[in-house]
Image (cartoon, rainbow, N blue to C red; front, side, top):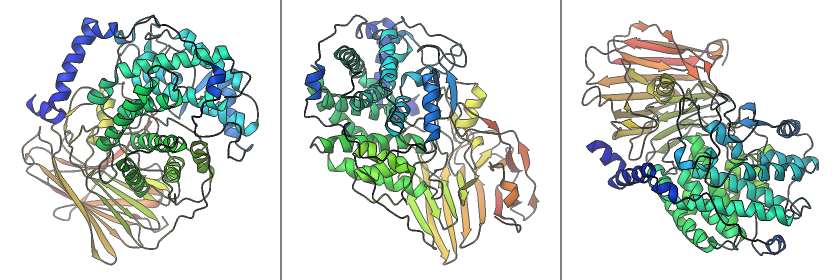
Length: 627
Protein backbone atom coordinates (compact mmCIF):
# COMPACT_ATOMS: atom_id res chain seq x y z
CA UNK A 1 0.00 0.00 0.00
CA UNK A 2 2.85 2.39 0.79
CA UNK A 3 4.41 1.76 -2.63
CA UNK A 4 0.99 2.23 -4.26
CA UNK A 5 0.56 5.63 -2.57
CA UNK A 6 4.09 6.60 -3.59
CA UNK A 7 3.41 5.66 -7.21
CA UNK A 8 -0.06 7.16 -7.57
CA UNK A 9 0.36 10.12 -5.24
CA UNK A 10 -1.41 11.21 -2.07
CA UNK A 11 -3.73 13.51 -4.03
CA UNK A 12 -4.95 10.61 -6.17
CA UNK A 13 -5.59 8.34 -3.18
CA UNK A 14 -7.47 11.01 -1.22
CA UNK A 15 -9.56 11.92 -4.25
CA UNK A 16 -10.52 8.30 -4.97
CA UNK A 17 -11.58 7.72 -1.36
CA UNK A 18 -13.65 10.89 -1.34
CA UNK A 19 -15.16 10.11 -4.73
CA UNK A 20 -16.22 6.61 -3.68
CA UNK A 21 -17.87 8.03 -0.57
CA UNK A 22 -19.84 10.54 -2.64
CA UNK A 23 -20.72 7.90 -5.22
CA UNK A 24 -21.96 5.27 -2.78
CA UNK A 25 -23.77 7.72 -0.52
CA UNK A 26 -25.73 9.23 -3.40
CA UNK A 27 -24.22 12.70 -2.96
CA UNK A 28 -22.69 12.55 -6.43
CA UNK A 29 -26.07 11.70 -7.93
CA UNK A 30 -27.61 14.81 -6.38
CA UNK A 31 -25.00 16.93 -8.14
CA UNK A 32 -26.32 15.82 -11.56
CA UNK A 33 -30.10 16.35 -11.72
CA UNK A 34 -32.33 14.59 -14.21
CA UNK A 35 -34.81 17.44 -14.57
CA UNK A 36 -33.24 20.43 -16.30
CA UNK A 37 -34.52 23.67 -17.80
CA UNK A 38 -34.30 24.36 -21.50
CA UNK A 39 -33.23 27.75 -22.82
CA UNK A 40 -34.09 29.60 -25.99
CA UNK A 41 -31.31 29.93 -28.57
CA UNK A 42 -31.66 31.67 -31.94
CA UNK A 43 -30.52 29.89 -35.09
CA UNK A 44 -30.25 33.15 -37.03
CA UNK A 45 -28.19 34.83 -34.33
CA UNK A 46 -25.86 31.84 -34.26
CA UNK A 47 -25.42 31.93 -38.03
CA UNK A 48 -24.31 35.56 -37.79
CA UNK A 49 -21.74 35.06 -35.04
CA UNK A 50 -18.18 36.09 -35.95
CA UNK A 51 -16.79 32.86 -34.45
CA UNK A 52 -14.98 30.78 -37.07
CA UNK A 53 -15.06 26.99 -37.49
CA UNK A 54 -12.37 24.87 -39.17
CA UNK A 55 -13.97 25.28 -42.58
CA UNK A 56 -16.47 27.51 -44.33
CA UNK A 57 -19.47 25.28 -45.15
CA UNK A 58 -20.21 27.40 -48.21
CA UNK A 59 -16.77 26.79 -49.71
CA UNK A 60 -14.83 23.79 -48.47
CA UNK A 61 -11.32 23.73 -49.92
CA UNK A 62 -11.32 20.07 -50.89
CA UNK A 63 -11.60 18.29 -54.23
CA UNK A 64 -14.53 15.91 -54.54
CA UNK A 65 -13.67 12.27 -55.11
CA UNK A 66 -16.46 10.04 -56.41
CA UNK A 67 -14.14 7.03 -56.55
CA UNK A 68 -14.44 6.54 -52.78
CA UNK A 69 -16.59 3.43 -53.19
CA UNK A 70 -15.94 2.13 -49.69
CA UNK A 71 -17.19 5.42 -48.28
CA UNK A 72 -20.37 5.06 -50.33
CA UNK A 73 -20.79 1.50 -49.06
CA UNK A 74 -20.34 2.57 -45.43
CA UNK A 75 -22.88 5.37 -45.80
CA UNK A 76 -25.36 2.86 -47.19
CA UNK A 77 -24.88 0.55 -44.22
CA UNK A 78 -25.36 3.42 -41.76
CA UNK A 79 -28.67 4.29 -43.43
CA UNK A 80 -29.70 0.68 -42.65
CA UNK A 81 -28.77 1.12 -38.97
CA UNK A 82 -25.53 -0.82 -39.22
CA UNK A 83 -22.45 0.73 -37.64
CA UNK A 84 -18.69 0.23 -37.67
CA UNK A 85 -17.28 -0.60 -34.24
CA UNK A 86 -13.64 0.08 -33.34
CA UNK A 87 -12.73 0.57 -37.00
CA UNK A 88 -13.02 -3.18 -37.61
CA UNK A 89 -16.43 -4.83 -37.16
CA UNK A 90 -19.99 -4.09 -38.26
CA UNK A 91 -23.03 -4.55 -36.04
CA UNK A 92 -26.71 -3.81 -36.30
CA UNK A 93 -27.66 -1.52 -33.42
CA UNK A 94 -31.38 -1.48 -32.75
CA UNK A 95 -31.21 1.29 -30.13
CA UNK A 96 -28.77 3.38 -28.08
CA UNK A 97 -28.56 1.15 -25.01
CA UNK A 98 -28.19 -2.48 -26.13
CA UNK A 99 -24.86 -4.28 -26.41
CA UNK A 100 -24.78 -5.56 -30.02
CA UNK A 101 -22.89 -8.75 -29.13
CA UNK A 102 -24.27 -9.81 -25.75
CA UNK A 103 -27.78 -8.41 -26.25
CA UNK A 104 -27.68 -6.88 -22.77
CA UNK A 105 -29.83 -3.74 -22.54
CA UNK A 106 -28.75 -1.08 -20.07
CA UNK A 107 -31.50 0.72 -18.15
CA UNK A 108 -31.92 4.06 -19.93
CA UNK A 109 -33.75 5.54 -16.93
CA UNK A 110 -31.16 4.68 -14.30
CA UNK A 111 -28.92 7.54 -13.18
CA UNK A 112 -25.44 7.32 -14.69
CA UNK A 113 -23.81 7.15 -11.25
CA UNK A 114 -25.59 3.81 -10.71
CA UNK A 115 -24.29 2.18 -13.90
CA UNK A 116 -20.98 0.26 -13.65
CA UNK A 117 -18.20 0.55 -16.22
CA UNK A 118 -17.35 -3.13 -15.89
CA UNK A 119 -19.96 -5.88 -15.70
CA UNK A 120 -19.49 -9.50 -16.70
CA UNK A 121 -23.22 -9.82 -17.38
CA UNK A 122 -23.41 -6.75 -19.61
CA UNK A 123 -20.12 -7.24 -21.44
CA UNK A 124 -17.78 -4.47 -22.50
CA UNK A 125 -19.69 -1.18 -22.17
CA UNK A 126 -17.55 0.30 -24.95
CA UNK A 127 -19.79 -1.58 -27.38
CA UNK A 128 -22.71 0.56 -26.23
CA UNK A 129 -20.71 3.78 -26.17
CA UNK A 130 -19.35 3.28 -29.68
CA UNK A 131 -22.54 4.12 -31.59
CA UNK A 132 -23.41 6.96 -29.22
CA UNK A 133 -20.01 8.51 -29.87
CA UNK A 134 -21.43 9.48 -33.32
CA UNK A 135 -18.16 8.92 -35.16
CA UNK A 136 -20.28 7.58 -38.02
CA UNK A 137 -21.37 11.15 -38.78
CA UNK A 138 -18.05 11.72 -40.55
CA UNK A 139 -18.86 9.03 -43.09
CA UNK A 140 -22.26 10.59 -43.76
CA UNK A 141 -20.84 14.11 -44.04
CA UNK A 142 -17.97 13.04 -46.28
CA UNK A 143 -20.38 11.03 -48.43
CA UNK A 144 -22.62 14.10 -48.66
CA UNK A 145 -19.65 16.21 -49.78
CA UNK A 146 -17.94 13.84 -52.22
CA UNK A 147 -21.08 12.42 -53.85
CA UNK A 148 -23.26 15.54 -53.41
CA UNK A 149 -26.13 13.54 -51.93
CA UNK A 150 -27.71 15.42 -49.04
CA UNK A 151 -27.52 13.48 -45.77
CA UNK A 152 -28.80 16.23 -43.48
CA UNK A 153 -32.15 14.59 -42.73
CA UNK A 154 -30.50 11.33 -41.72
CA UNK A 155 -27.84 13.13 -39.65
CA UNK A 156 -30.32 15.18 -37.66
CA UNK A 157 -32.71 12.23 -37.35
CA UNK A 158 -29.95 10.29 -35.55
CA UNK A 159 -29.06 13.24 -33.32
CA UNK A 160 -32.61 14.13 -32.31
CA UNK A 161 -33.50 10.49 -31.73
CA UNK A 162 -30.54 10.19 -29.36
CA UNK A 163 -31.73 13.26 -27.45
CA UNK A 164 -35.25 11.83 -27.18
CA UNK A 165 -34.04 8.41 -26.00
CA UNK A 166 -31.31 9.53 -23.56
CA UNK A 167 -32.73 11.48 -20.64
CA UNK A 168 -30.27 13.98 -19.18
CA UNK A 169 -27.88 12.27 -16.72
CA UNK A 170 -29.53 8.87 -17.23
CA UNK A 171 -28.37 5.69 -18.90
CA UNK A 172 -24.98 4.37 -19.99
CA UNK A 173 -24.32 7.16 -22.46
CA UNK A 174 -24.01 9.74 -19.69
CA UNK A 175 -21.53 7.56 -17.79
CA UNK A 176 -18.23 8.69 -19.34
CA UNK A 177 -17.20 12.32 -19.66
CA UNK A 178 -14.91 11.62 -22.59
CA UNK A 179 -17.63 9.84 -24.55
CA UNK A 180 -19.95 12.78 -23.94
CA UNK A 181 -17.33 15.26 -25.12
CA UNK A 182 -16.64 13.29 -28.29
CA UNK A 183 -20.35 13.16 -29.07
CA UNK A 184 -20.54 16.93 -28.65
CA UNK A 185 -17.49 17.42 -30.90
CA UNK A 186 -19.11 15.31 -33.60
CA UNK A 187 -22.50 16.98 -33.35
CA UNK A 188 -20.77 20.35 -33.57
CA UNK A 189 -18.96 19.27 -36.74
CA UNK A 190 -22.30 18.24 -38.25
CA UNK A 191 -24.11 21.41 -37.17
CA UNK A 192 -21.42 23.56 -38.80
CA UNK A 193 -21.35 21.51 -42.00
CA UNK A 194 -25.13 21.91 -42.29
CA UNK A 195 -25.09 25.46 -40.95
CA UNK A 196 -27.20 26.80 -43.83
CA UNK A 197 -29.17 23.65 -44.58
CA UNK A 198 -32.96 23.89 -44.70
CA UNK A 199 -33.05 20.74 -42.56
CA UNK A 200 -31.49 22.64 -39.67
CA UNK A 201 -34.67 24.35 -38.52
CA UNK A 202 -34.86 26.69 -35.51
CA UNK A 203 -36.55 23.89 -33.58
CA UNK A 204 -33.87 21.30 -34.34
CA UNK A 205 -31.09 23.81 -33.66
CA UNK A 206 -32.53 24.71 -30.27
CA UNK A 207 -32.99 21.06 -29.35
CA UNK A 208 -29.44 20.14 -30.32
CA UNK A 209 -27.65 23.06 -28.67
CA UNK A 210 -29.66 22.64 -25.45
CA UNK A 211 -28.50 19.03 -25.34
CA UNK A 212 -24.91 20.12 -26.04
CA UNK A 213 -25.11 22.51 -23.10
CA UNK A 214 -26.54 19.87 -20.75
CA UNK A 215 -23.86 17.39 -21.78
CA UNK A 216 -21.02 19.84 -21.23
CA UNK A 217 -22.45 20.77 -17.82
CA UNK A 218 -22.17 17.07 -16.98
CA UNK A 219 -18.55 17.07 -18.20
CA UNK A 220 -17.61 20.15 -16.20
CA UNK A 221 -19.33 18.83 -13.09
CA UNK A 222 -17.16 15.71 -13.01
CA UNK A 223 -13.99 17.07 -14.60
CA UNK A 224 -11.95 16.36 -11.47
CA UNK A 225 -12.38 12.63 -12.06
CA UNK A 226 -10.72 12.96 -15.46
CA UNK A 227 -8.00 15.32 -14.20
CA UNK A 228 -7.10 13.45 -11.00
CA UNK A 229 -8.34 9.85 -11.08
CA UNK A 230 -7.79 9.10 -14.78
CA UNK A 231 -5.44 11.80 -16.07
CA UNK A 232 -4.80 10.52 -19.55
CA UNK A 233 -6.42 11.11 -22.94
CA UNK A 234 -9.76 11.45 -21.12
CA UNK A 235 -8.53 14.60 -19.40
CA UNK A 236 -7.15 15.97 -22.67
CA UNK A 237 -10.47 15.41 -24.42
CA UNK A 238 -12.67 16.85 -21.70
CA UNK A 239 -10.59 19.93 -20.93
CA UNK A 240 -10.23 20.81 -24.61
CA UNK A 241 -13.96 20.17 -25.01
CA UNK A 242 -14.75 22.87 -22.46
CA UNK A 243 -12.58 25.37 -24.33
CA UNK A 244 -13.95 24.30 -27.73
CA UNK A 245 -17.62 24.54 -26.76
CA UNK A 246 -17.08 27.72 -24.76
CA UNK A 247 -15.50 29.31 -27.83
CA UNK A 248 -18.00 28.12 -30.45
CA UNK A 249 -21.19 28.65 -28.42
CA UNK A 250 -20.55 31.97 -26.67
CA UNK A 251 -24.26 32.42 -25.92
CA UNK A 252 -24.31 29.68 -23.25
CA UNK A 253 -24.34 31.21 -19.73
CA UNK A 254 -21.34 29.04 -18.82
CA UNK A 255 -19.33 29.65 -22.01
CA UNK A 256 -16.90 32.22 -20.66
CA UNK A 257 -16.05 30.03 -17.69
CA UNK A 258 -15.74 26.89 -19.81
CA UNK A 259 -13.47 28.56 -22.33
CA UNK A 260 -11.20 30.08 -19.68
CA UNK A 261 -10.91 27.00 -17.48
CA UNK A 262 -10.77 24.58 -20.39
CA UNK A 263 -7.88 26.44 -21.97
CA UNK A 264 -5.87 26.56 -18.75
CA UNK A 265 -6.54 22.91 -17.93
CA UNK A 266 -5.75 21.70 -21.45
CA UNK A 267 -2.40 23.53 -21.32
CA UNK A 268 -1.66 21.84 -18.00
CA UNK A 269 -2.61 18.39 -19.29
CA UNK A 270 -0.44 18.72 -22.39
CA UNK A 271 2.52 19.72 -20.21
CA UNK A 272 1.89 16.79 -17.85
CA UNK A 273 1.08 14.08 -20.38
CA UNK A 274 3.71 14.71 -23.07
CA UNK A 275 7.35 14.40 -22.02
CA UNK A 276 10.08 16.70 -23.24
CA UNK A 277 11.13 14.20 -25.92
CA UNK A 278 7.57 14.00 -27.30
CA UNK A 279 6.63 10.64 -25.79
CA UNK A 280 3.23 10.12 -24.17
CA UNK A 281 2.33 9.04 -20.64
CA UNK A 282 0.00 6.21 -21.74
CA UNK A 283 2.82 4.30 -23.48
CA UNK A 284 0.59 3.70 -26.49
CA UNK A 285 0.94 4.97 -30.04
CA UNK A 286 -2.81 4.84 -30.63
CA UNK A 287 -3.61 6.90 -27.54
CA UNK A 288 -0.82 9.27 -28.54
CA UNK A 289 -2.66 9.72 -31.84
CA UNK A 290 -5.68 10.90 -29.84
CA UNK A 291 -3.51 13.65 -28.38
CA UNK A 292 -2.30 14.49 -31.89
CA UNK A 293 -5.83 14.98 -33.24
CA UNK A 294 -6.81 17.08 -30.23
CA UNK A 295 -3.69 19.22 -30.64
CA UNK A 296 -4.47 19.69 -34.34
CA UNK A 297 -7.96 20.86 -33.46
CA UNK A 298 -6.78 23.05 -30.59
CA UNK A 299 -4.12 24.81 -32.66
CA UNK A 300 -6.42 25.14 -35.67
CA UNK A 301 -9.53 26.48 -33.93
CA UNK A 302 -7.49 28.95 -31.88
CA UNK A 303 -5.78 30.29 -35.00
CA UNK A 304 -9.10 30.64 -36.83
CA UNK A 305 -10.29 32.85 -33.98
CA UNK A 306 -7.09 34.88 -33.47
CA UNK A 307 -6.12 33.10 -30.27
CA UNK A 308 -2.84 31.50 -29.25
CA UNK A 309 -1.69 28.75 -26.93
CA UNK A 310 1.40 29.02 -24.73
CA UNK A 311 4.63 28.25 -26.59
CA UNK A 312 5.02 24.95 -24.72
CA UNK A 313 1.88 23.55 -26.35
CA UNK A 314 3.33 24.09 -29.83
CA UNK A 315 6.72 22.74 -28.77
CA UNK A 316 5.26 19.53 -27.36
CA UNK A 317 3.06 19.12 -30.44
CA UNK A 318 6.20 19.33 -32.59
CA UNK A 319 7.99 16.84 -30.35
CA UNK A 320 5.03 14.44 -30.58
CA UNK A 321 5.08 14.70 -34.36
CA UNK A 322 8.80 13.91 -34.43
CA UNK A 323 8.44 10.91 -32.11
CA UNK A 324 5.54 9.30 -33.95
CA UNK A 325 7.13 9.83 -37.36
CA UNK A 326 10.32 8.25 -36.04
CA UNK A 327 8.25 5.16 -35.10
CA UNK A 328 6.45 5.12 -38.44
CA UNK A 329 7.02 2.53 -41.13
CA UNK A 330 7.32 4.61 -44.28
CA UNK A 331 5.72 2.35 -46.90
CA UNK A 332 2.41 1.79 -45.10
CA UNK A 333 2.33 4.73 -42.70
CA UNK A 334 1.70 2.22 -39.88
CA UNK A 335 3.37 2.16 -36.49
CA UNK A 336 4.07 -0.80 -34.19
CA UNK A 337 0.89 -2.08 -32.56
CA UNK A 338 2.44 -0.89 -29.33
CA UNK A 339 0.60 -0.24 -26.06
CA UNK A 340 -3.10 -0.22 -25.35
CA UNK A 341 -5.23 0.06 -28.48
CA UNK A 342 -8.98 0.30 -28.05
CA UNK A 343 -9.67 0.97 -31.72
CA UNK A 344 -10.10 4.68 -31.15
CA UNK A 345 -9.85 7.02 -34.10
CA UNK A 346 -11.90 9.94 -32.86
CA UNK A 347 -12.22 11.86 -36.11
CA UNK A 348 -11.95 9.57 -39.17
CA UNK A 349 -11.75 12.07 -42.02
CA UNK A 350 -10.13 9.92 -44.71
CA UNK A 351 -10.53 6.46 -46.17
CA UNK A 352 -7.07 5.38 -45.02
CA UNK A 353 -6.63 2.26 -42.92
CA UNK A 354 -7.10 2.68 -39.18
CA UNK A 355 -3.43 1.82 -38.60
CA UNK A 356 -2.20 4.44 -41.09
CA UNK A 357 -1.08 7.50 -39.11
CA UNK A 358 -0.31 9.69 -42.14
CA UNK A 359 -3.68 11.53 -42.07
CA UNK A 360 -3.28 12.63 -38.45
CA UNK A 361 0.44 13.41 -38.59
CA UNK A 362 0.09 15.35 -41.85
CA UNK A 363 -2.76 17.40 -40.35
CA UNK A 364 -0.74 18.23 -37.24
CA UNK A 365 2.26 19.19 -39.37
CA UNK A 366 0.02 21.51 -41.37
CA UNK A 367 -1.36 23.10 -38.20
CA UNK A 368 2.23 23.69 -37.08
CA UNK A 369 3.14 25.14 -40.52
CA UNK A 370 5.65 22.35 -41.08
CA UNK A 371 6.46 20.06 -43.98
CA UNK A 372 4.67 16.79 -43.25
CA UNK A 373 7.22 14.77 -45.29
CA UNK A 374 4.61 12.64 -47.10
CA UNK A 375 3.77 12.48 -50.76
CA UNK A 376 0.28 13.56 -51.77
CA UNK A 377 -2.33 10.87 -51.13
CA UNK A 378 -5.74 10.13 -49.63
CA UNK A 379 -4.31 10.95 -46.19
CA UNK A 380 -4.31 14.66 -47.10
CA UNK A 381 -8.10 14.96 -46.80
CA UNK A 382 -7.97 15.31 -43.02
CA UNK A 383 -5.78 18.38 -43.37
CA UNK A 384 -8.35 20.04 -45.62
CA UNK A 385 -11.19 19.48 -43.15
CA UNK A 386 -9.24 20.76 -40.15
CA UNK A 387 -7.38 23.66 -41.74
CA UNK A 388 -9.42 24.61 -44.78
CA UNK A 389 -6.18 24.28 -46.74
CA UNK A 390 -4.60 21.68 -48.96
CA UNK A 391 -1.32 20.03 -48.02
CA UNK A 392 1.65 21.25 -49.95
CA UNK A 393 3.33 18.70 -52.16
CA UNK A 394 6.10 17.01 -50.24
CA UNK A 395 8.36 14.08 -50.92
CA UNK A 396 9.65 11.79 -48.22
CA UNK A 397 13.41 11.90 -48.36
CA UNK A 398 14.80 8.39 -48.56
CA UNK A 399 18.31 7.78 -47.35
CA UNK A 400 20.73 4.93 -47.92
CA UNK A 401 22.13 5.30 -44.43
CA UNK A 402 21.05 4.40 -40.92
CA UNK A 403 18.85 6.79 -39.02
CA UNK A 404 18.75 6.34 -35.27
CA UNK A 405 16.42 7.86 -32.70
CA UNK A 406 16.66 7.80 -28.91
CA UNK A 407 13.73 8.92 -26.76
CA UNK A 408 15.11 8.37 -23.30
CA UNK A 409 12.33 10.12 -21.36
CA UNK A 410 9.79 7.63 -22.68
CA UNK A 411 12.19 4.75 -23.22
CA UNK A 412 12.16 4.11 -26.99
CA UNK A 413 15.06 3.31 -29.31
CA UNK A 414 14.53 3.18 -33.07
CA UNK A 415 16.73 2.21 -35.99
CA UNK A 416 15.73 2.83 -39.61
CA UNK A 417 17.41 1.97 -42.88
CA UNK A 418 16.02 1.93 -46.44
CA UNK A 419 14.45 -1.51 -45.96
CA UNK A 420 13.67 -1.98 -42.29
CA UNK A 421 12.57 -0.50 -38.98
CA UNK A 422 13.70 -1.86 -35.62
CA UNK A 423 11.84 -0.59 -32.55
CA UNK A 424 13.07 -1.34 -29.01
CA UNK A 425 11.16 -0.44 -25.86
CA UNK A 426 12.91 0.02 -22.51
CA UNK A 427 11.47 2.51 -20.05
CA UNK A 428 11.07 3.29 -16.39
CA UNK A 429 7.69 4.26 -15.01
CA UNK A 430 7.14 7.56 -13.26
CA UNK A 431 3.51 7.40 -14.42
CA UNK A 432 1.08 4.53 -14.48
CA UNK A 433 2.16 1.57 -16.69
CA UNK A 434 -0.40 -0.28 -18.80
CA UNK A 435 1.54 -3.24 -20.20
CA UNK A 436 4.53 -5.25 -18.96
CA UNK A 437 6.51 -4.99 -22.17
CA UNK A 438 10.05 -3.82 -21.45
CA UNK A 439 12.68 -4.79 -24.03
CA UNK A 440 9.99 -5.69 -26.55
CA UNK A 441 11.44 -5.45 -30.05
CA UNK A 442 9.34 -4.85 -33.16
CA UNK A 443 10.85 -5.53 -36.59
CA UNK A 444 9.46 -4.33 -39.94
CA UNK A 445 10.80 -5.09 -43.41
CA UNK A 446 9.49 -3.41 -46.57
CA UNK A 447 6.13 -2.67 -45.00
CA UNK A 448 5.69 -6.06 -43.30
CA UNK A 449 5.66 -6.36 -39.50
CA UNK A 450 7.63 -9.61 -39.33
CA UNK A 451 7.98 -9.69 -35.52
CA UNK A 452 5.12 -7.92 -33.83
CA UNK A 453 3.30 -6.87 -30.70
CA UNK A 454 0.21 -9.03 -30.06
CA UNK A 455 -2.01 -5.99 -29.39
CA UNK A 456 -4.79 -5.42 -26.86
CA UNK A 457 -8.04 -7.30 -27.70
CA UNK A 458 -10.52 -6.09 -25.01
CA UNK A 459 -10.54 -4.38 -21.62
CA UNK A 460 -13.50 -6.33 -20.26
CA UNK A 461 -13.12 -9.99 -21.16
CA UNK A 462 -11.82 -13.27 -19.73
CA UNK A 463 -9.19 -12.64 -17.05
CA UNK A 464 -6.66 -14.91 -18.76
CA UNK A 465 -6.94 -12.94 -21.99
CA UNK A 466 -6.61 -9.63 -20.15
CA UNK A 467 -3.44 -10.85 -18.47
CA UNK A 468 -2.07 -12.27 -21.71
CA UNK A 469 -2.47 -9.15 -23.84
CA UNK A 470 -1.37 -6.74 -21.11
CA UNK A 471 1.39 -9.01 -19.88
CA UNK A 472 4.89 -9.96 -20.92
CA UNK A 473 3.86 -13.13 -22.79
CA UNK A 474 2.30 -11.15 -25.66
CA UNK A 475 5.55 -9.29 -26.41
CA UNK A 476 8.87 -10.11 -28.05
CA UNK A 477 10.90 -10.11 -24.85
CA UNK A 478 11.92 -12.42 -21.98
CA UNK A 479 9.90 -13.99 -19.17
CA UNK A 480 11.12 -15.71 -16.03
CA UNK A 481 9.02 -18.84 -15.68
CA UNK A 482 5.44 -17.65 -16.10
CA UNK A 483 6.00 -14.35 -14.29
CA UNK A 484 5.32 -10.96 -15.84
CA UNK A 485 7.91 -8.19 -15.45
CA UNK A 486 5.56 -6.51 -12.95
CA UNK A 487 2.78 -7.92 -10.78
CA UNK A 488 -0.68 -7.56 -12.32
CA UNK A 489 -3.35 -5.89 -10.23
CA UNK A 490 -7.09 -5.45 -10.88
CA UNK A 491 -8.31 -3.83 -14.09
CA UNK A 492 -5.57 -1.57 -15.49
CA UNK A 493 -3.34 -1.63 -12.42
CA UNK A 494 0.20 -2.96 -12.06
CA UNK A 495 2.31 -3.24 -8.92
CA UNK A 496 6.08 -3.21 -8.64
CA UNK A 497 6.62 -0.52 -11.26
CA UNK A 498 9.94 -0.66 -13.08
CA UNK A 499 11.99 2.28 -11.83
CA UNK A 500 15.46 1.52 -13.21
CA UNK A 501 15.90 1.33 -16.98
CA UNK A 502 18.31 2.72 -19.54
CA UNK A 503 19.34 2.32 -23.15
CA UNK A 504 21.44 3.65 -25.99
CA UNK A 505 22.28 3.12 -29.66
CA UNK A 506 25.95 2.82 -30.68
CA UNK A 507 27.88 2.32 -33.90
CA UNK A 508 30.43 -0.44 -33.36
CA UNK A 509 31.81 0.29 -36.83
CA UNK A 510 30.37 1.98 -39.94
CA UNK A 511 28.53 -1.22 -40.89
CA UNK A 512 27.39 -2.51 -37.50
CA UNK A 513 25.10 -0.88 -34.97
CA UNK A 514 23.90 -2.07 -31.56
CA UNK A 515 20.80 -1.09 -29.62
CA UNK A 516 21.56 -1.83 -25.99
CA UNK A 517 19.18 -1.54 -23.03
CA UNK A 518 18.51 -3.03 -19.60
CA UNK A 519 16.12 -2.72 -16.68
CA UNK A 520 15.58 -4.01 -13.17
CA UNK A 521 12.23 -5.72 -12.64
CA UNK A 522 10.38 -8.85 -11.50
CA UNK A 523 10.35 -7.38 -7.97
CA UNK A 524 7.62 -9.85 -6.98
CA UNK A 525 9.95 -12.73 -7.90
CA UNK A 526 13.23 -11.69 -6.27
CA UNK A 527 15.33 -8.62 -5.58
CA UNK A 528 17.84 -7.24 -8.04
CA UNK A 529 16.73 -9.16 -11.15
CA UNK A 530 18.07 -7.47 -14.28
CA UNK A 531 17.36 -8.14 -17.93
CA UNK A 532 19.85 -6.88 -20.51
CA UNK A 533 19.25 -6.95 -24.26
CA UNK A 534 21.52 -6.13 -27.18
CA UNK A 535 20.16 -5.89 -30.72
CA UNK A 536 22.84 -5.95 -33.44
CA UNK A 537 21.99 -4.90 -37.00
CA UNK A 538 24.28 -5.09 -40.02
CA UNK A 539 24.16 -2.34 -42.62
CA UNK A 540 22.49 -3.32 -45.89
CA UNK A 541 21.44 -6.74 -44.61
CA UNK A 542 18.22 -8.20 -43.25
CA UNK A 543 20.14 -9.72 -40.38
CA UNK A 544 19.61 -9.18 -36.64
CA UNK A 545 21.36 -10.72 -33.64
CA UNK A 546 19.60 -10.39 -30.28
CA UNK A 547 21.45 -11.21 -27.06
CA UNK A 548 19.50 -11.52 -23.81
CA UNK A 549 21.04 -12.02 -20.39
CA UNK A 550 19.55 -12.21 -16.90
CA UNK A 551 21.05 -11.59 -13.48
CA UNK A 552 19.95 -12.60 -9.95
CA UNK A 553 17.19 -14.96 -11.05
CA UNK A 554 16.21 -17.81 -8.67
CA UNK A 555 17.84 -21.03 -9.87
CA UNK A 556 14.58 -22.96 -10.20
CA UNK A 557 13.03 -20.59 -12.75
CA UNK A 558 13.68 -21.01 -16.49
CA UNK A 559 14.49 -18.17 -18.86
CA UNK A 560 12.01 -17.92 -21.75
CA UNK A 561 12.62 -15.78 -24.83
CA UNK A 562 9.36 -15.16 -26.71
CA UNK A 563 8.76 -14.21 -30.35
CA UNK A 564 5.52 -13.33 -32.16
CA UNK A 565 6.10 -13.75 -35.90
CA UNK A 566 3.65 -12.74 -38.60
CA UNK A 567 1.87 -15.46 -40.58
CA UNK A 568 4.32 -15.41 -43.50
CA UNK A 569 7.48 -15.10 -41.41
CA UNK A 570 8.95 -18.49 -42.33
CA UNK A 571 8.35 -17.91 -46.04
CA UNK A 572 11.07 -15.27 -46.00
CA UNK A 573 13.00 -15.45 -42.72
CA UNK A 574 14.62 -17.90 -40.36
CA UNK A 575 15.28 -17.74 -36.65
CA UNK A 576 17.91 -19.64 -34.65
CA UNK A 577 19.10 -19.46 -31.05
CA UNK A 578 21.94 -20.75 -28.92
CA UNK A 579 22.66 -20.77 -25.21
CA UNK A 580 25.66 -19.40 -23.31
CA UNK A 581 27.72 -22.49 -24.25
CA UNK A 582 26.98 -22.13 -27.94
CA UNK A 583 24.57 -25.07 -28.01
CA UNK A 584 21.76 -24.77 -30.54
CA UNK A 585 18.32 -24.29 -28.98
CA UNK A 586 15.02 -25.41 -30.44
CA UNK A 587 11.91 -23.31 -30.09
CA UNK A 588 8.57 -24.60 -28.92
CA UNK A 589 5.35 -23.26 -30.36
CA UNK A 590 3.02 -22.11 -27.60
CA UNK A 591 -0.53 -20.83 -27.71
CA UNK A 592 -0.65 -17.20 -28.73
CA UNK A 593 -3.02 -14.58 -30.03
CA UNK A 594 -2.84 -11.51 -32.24
CA UNK A 595 -5.25 -8.57 -32.06
CA UNK A 596 -4.87 -5.90 -34.71
CA UNK A 597 -8.21 -4.31 -33.85
CA UNK A 598 -10.13 -3.93 -30.61
CA UNK A 599 -12.53 -6.81 -30.00
CA UNK A 600 -10.86 -9.01 -32.64
CA UNK A 601 -8.30 -11.75 -32.07
CA UNK A 602 -6.83 -14.57 -34.13
CA UNK A 603 -4.72 -17.54 -33.10
CA UNK A 604 -1.07 -16.80 -33.67
CA UNK A 605 1.37 -19.25 -32.07
CA UNK A 606 4.35 -17.78 -30.24
CA UNK A 607 7.88 -19.16 -30.55
CA UNK A 608 9.54 -19.79 -27.20
CA UNK A 609 13.22 -20.54 -26.59
CA UNK A 610 13.58 -21.84 -23.01
CA UNK A 611 16.70 -22.60 -20.97
CA UNK A 612 17.79 -23.12 -17.40
CA UNK A 613 20.72 -20.84 -18.22
CA UNK A 614 20.75 -17.07 -18.18
CA UNK A 615 21.80 -16.19 -21.73
CA UNK A 616 20.23 -16.60 -25.18
CA UNK A 617 21.69 -15.42 -28.47
CA UNK A 618 19.18 -15.35 -31.33
CA UNK A 619 19.78 -14.76 -35.03
CA UNK A 620 17.01 -13.54 -37.32
CA UNK A 621 17.80 -13.24 -41.02
CA UNK A 622 16.36 -13.43 -44.49
CA UNK A 623 16.32 -16.85 -46.12
CA UNK A 624 18.49 -17.41 -49.19
CA UNK A 625 15.35 -17.68 -51.32
CA UNK A 626 14.59 -14.01 -50.63
CA UNK A 627 13.37 -11.52 -48.06
